[in-house]
Every structure is written in C-alpha cells, then in structure tokens.
Length: 184
Image (cartoon, rainbow, N blue to C red):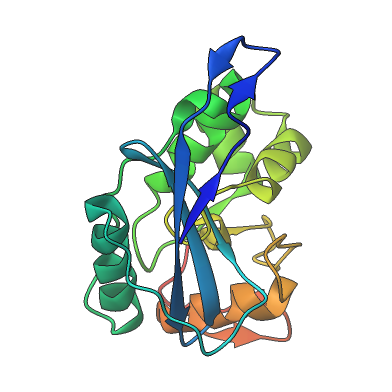
C-alpha cells in the first residue's frame, strides 16, 4: 500500500515523495509500518485486523521478517534504520538510550534521565517515551518506575500491551509491578 503525501510542502518549499506503508498481523494485533526513503518513520498498532500486506519495498520486507522473528521468540534486538531526524534533541537522546535496553532487562525513568545527563528529568523522559514513534523497535515497554510499577504506555491497549510485551520477554508481572526475578 502506498500513501501519497501532498505533492508540495509549502513550509519547507520542497516536493514531497511517496511514503510506503505495510500492515503486518502479529499476536499483539495489526501493525502499520511506514517508511520514507530508506528509513522507517513510524511503527504503530493499527485498528485493522486479519489483514496482511506484503510490501515490495525491501526495507518493509526486512521489518516484517524481524517482527515475525521477535514474536516467534527468535529476535532480541531489531536492526532497522529509523528516521531520527524528525525528533528534537532531548527526545532523540532519550529514545536512543531506550534502544540500548537489552531484551529481558528494564530501566527506570530516573536511570534514563541520568544517562541523558538530566538526572531530575524523569517526567520529561516519560513524555519522550510516551511519544515514541517506533513501537517495540524502540522498546519503551522496558521502561518502568523506580518502584518497578508499570506506568502509562501510549500504544493502543495501554498497560495491557506493555504487560503482554514484558511477559513475552520473560518478565513476571504481579499486581501491576514487574517481579524482581531477573529484572532491573
């Protein structure tokens, strides 16, 4: 499926090109994967179900293969080119730290703020994590409160989606908190 942007962006005064999109059915629901050129611009849960579309674009095919491997339990980190240029500095720094959280591990908002160099910026980290355009590939579901509690998650399904992903990655969730066993 190819969505066309407006042929001309009056603000940037440049001609727009095609955005390619693919839909992929997974155990968590249907994902829409968007690419612009050779970079992924967004990955999100879509409202459609029972719909799979194989894209001709090599990047979208690669993304679909990696998603399939992740849900089969055969992939612990993604290697896909992301369109970082669309993000402001702080948000980009936060999400780049989040990309580095290994499969099966967790980090707190405070730990991420400290790594970015703003130790008191936990709420700002939460806002950056909440506006993550690349669901699962930038694993914001691996970010929890300092008390191991599952805080908000902006993907459709909210905390249910976050809980599903954490359980898929081997974490035990008890009464809205991640068990200490193998975590943090």
